[in-house]
Length: 397
Image 1: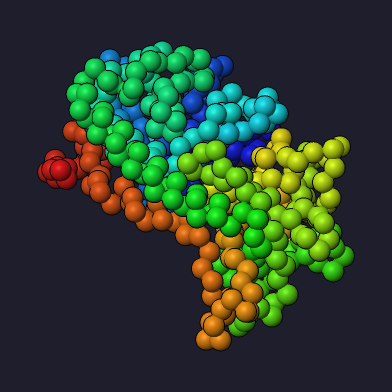
Image 2: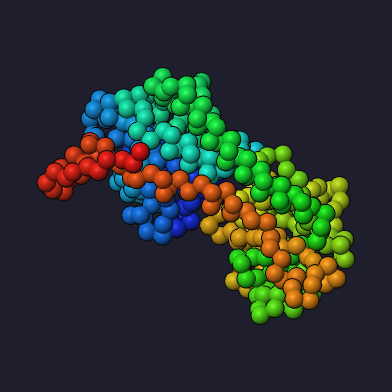
């Protein structure tokens, strides 16, 4: 079941900061995973870039001596492995999801903001040459550290102490500078979270994918989306009372209550996916996990029940549970403003929702580093293609 919901169905669904792994079955009967972090995304496989601990050299001793944390095209990350075996490693999953998943594809712990993950990747670039060790410093240790700040390899059950990977080669001042940068990113993210929390207890409209709104259907149970048209005020959108709280710097727990009916938007916890959302009343038997979602900086709503599914939109406009992030819809909270509180020259439809993209716009790490390749990577490509030697560009300082 873990492979069903962690598989990368489309390359275009990958996002910078994603933790990915590829299964290698070439050493039957043993299988293992190679891990990395997506640095740059694209609709084309050849344009996707991945940060990982790796060397293109074939000899074990030579590869171990040359291996370091580097940026490579996704094609090199796959390294003749089948793209169907590519997985998106999940974080903050439930015990139920962890139990049913393939080993190493999910983690119950929380991950950091993508901008924090990419800052750690940028910090590690070029480090670790000759330090690879399958038990104490492998590709999964580095990838998990980039996501969480902790060096852990689930496939071999080893945790490494230290503030950062390859710490023995680094000055304390460099590590302190990284931590200061991360705190700055978290500070901006806290501002975004606080802007969402200010809406708690107030009525909001749920805007979907920028030009649609959520509404409760005439039966009072099902929930679908309607186009906003020329005037969102006339599209029969539904106002919900937003209930939200946060204990983290990078996410908010939210619930949507319809005051007129006394019902919450509810995600049903079932084994089948693509089940439609319903409006239900809270009770002790039903619990509250199906009524709460985690709202992320990516604009996705991730259910807090045992299946941790996203909210997506079916072709007919019905809101449904979806297992893959690539099928999830983008949500914004648009505050409801009464006509008496605005001037005649304004409209409630133009009230801006909280800007959840502020952190992403402030820190675009992919544009701050020019892609570099090691000499061994160039030599490897020349050997494969029979090309003359090329001149390396100096990396940006």
